[in-house]
Length: 69
Image 1 (cartoon, one colour):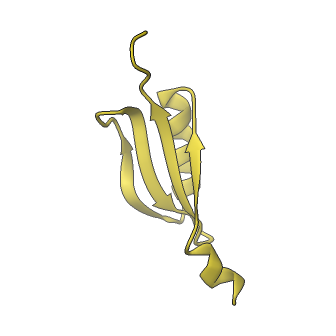
Image 2 (cartoon, one colour):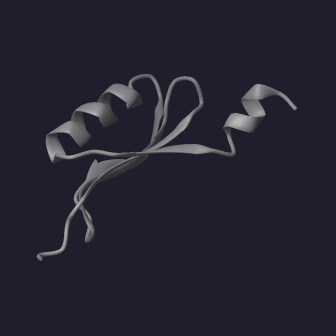
């Protein structure tokens, strides 16, 4: 099995602490890559985005909203 084909079946989930950090990391990884879902606020996340980097590796960047205690 080729290494490249194996990498298409996995993704890296990257939880981050702040929306600014999520945006910075997302845009750095997306450079020369392909964005599947732009980094944006969702119902459960301050920032959430999905992309494939220039090397073909899939990433999910997430800054989760925490429920009020």
